[in-house]
Each structure stands twice: as C-alpha cells, then as structure tokens.
Length: 97
Image 1: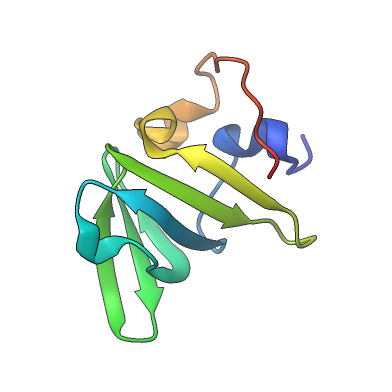
Image 2: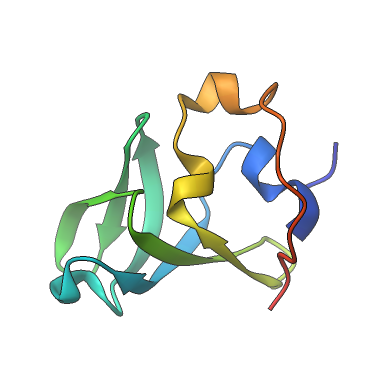
C-alpha cells in the first residue's frame, strides 16, 4: 500500500515531518519536527530544540509526505499501538490539505 493521504493512518509514521497545528497545550502549537518514535498515545519528535514528546489526543497534526504533500490529521485518529493501526478500520474523512 502506497503512502497517500487517504492511507496515512495505516502506515509507519516514523521518519515523517510533522507540524503541531492545534493542541490542548498551547506551548506545543507550531512545534515542528521529525517523528522518531511512537507509542499508543504519544509521538516523540526530534525538533531544533531537542526531543519533545507530544500527546496524540487533543492534537491536530500536519504531516508532510515524502512527495511533499501535506496531510492534516486529528491525533485522536492515530491513538493505537502502531502495529495495530494497520488492521484498524478507519473512518472516511478528507485527509488532504
């Protein structure tokens, strides 16, 4: 399966660039970095100011795909262990920005 906006949530996200567009924690808004690790509820981002852990819940993220496409995703859609997300049924939404 190719990495396209519609299938982003079913792929490995480590290595992708991400921007925190909105968050329950206002200090995270605008944070940009590369996903270096992922747990069920968090992403670990490598930023210019070091490693930051951000919660998936209550967060809106914009991922940049390798081809340069930008995809906005509600973090709550990604709450799951990465290995289990592949088989999880995803709700149909508009993914592309």
